[in-house]
Image 1 (cartoon, rainbow, N blue to C red):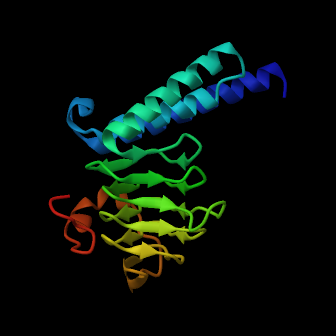
Image 2: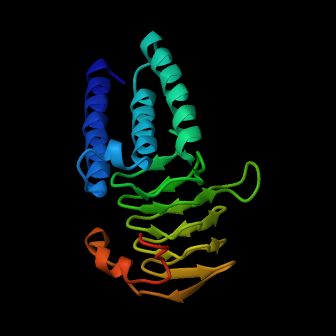
Length: 209
């Protein structure tokens, strides 16, 4: 890759990164979210780690990586949310409440997804595959998605569910192990604008949000 191509690639990545962080902040929808929502601390550290990884190798990157790991461990311990920078998470991430949220480093999460306390997105055994989550997916409190499963765009995972198999676009899965109780033939467009539907769904709600 030429110097010009590398500069262009880095500039393009910075633009995408700024959009992702801006989308995260919009999802929180409050003024001064750092004073009101502890979960955004973990999201901010995650985005910082992604920016550090995109930097060229050198002393600055090594120093910033050390800063990232210190911030990651402090926030992980303080709020109980583990969002490793190796995971690929789209913009518009929203985490309601905090505590007990774990995302595997190999996981892929789409845009405008919503997590709640106690959610685990991980593998079923050491070295095993991690889930791939589509856009606009809602997770109820303490939902578990384990193994190399795919969760379709616009899906809803009920509170306390344990998902071990694929969930189609627009479907709702509940139970342990989870089963499909509502299925949509096509992806639901504009899920990020359908908050009232999510809030009315007893399978997702867990006491307030």
